[in-house]
Length: 216
Image 1 (tube, one colour):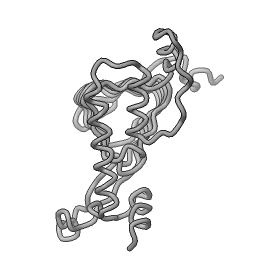
Image 2 (cartoon, helix red, strand yellow):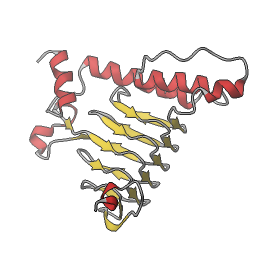
Image 3 (cartoon, one colour):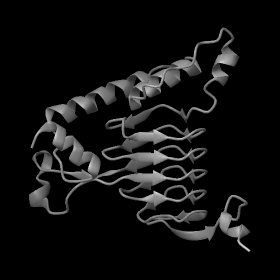
Image 4 (cartoon, one colour):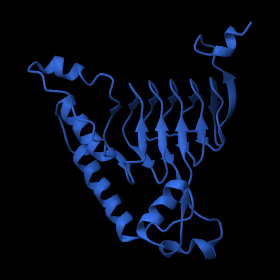
């Protein structure tokens, strides 16, 4: 199997080999990009945005720089805000909406696509695991065997508490809340509070954003 097909299999959530030269190099690129972001220190919002876009390989040109720092910072008010340190596998499989906040020590195993909707807030030490392994140890075979993954999608206007772990292949619905310390093993419906290990239904979120409340 060629390197291009191996990478396509990874993106499709099929069995693939992660310790090929191409994928090892891509993880190394992302690791170094994360290190630059994590060690940036007290720099401008523009610089942080530039460094983060390098991690996720977003080639969108930055807007022209303004002289006043406050006005220049305002140009990036809708960009996601990610507190360092952050760790990712590839970077390019992460998609963040507008006004997303992610607190420190986030981990993204972005073997497959991970999306987080606009205005979602993520607490510290939250892990998004799109990567997984075969259950059969003979097939798994350490670093010599294949692995796979499944996409993770978090909706708009969610709140993910600190120390949450989100497992592969899950959808967290719009406007939902995941309590701190939870392990999410099943899909979460829109406008729902879940918590625990495994995360279980706690209550519905009552909000004008829920269209079902306006059905006559």
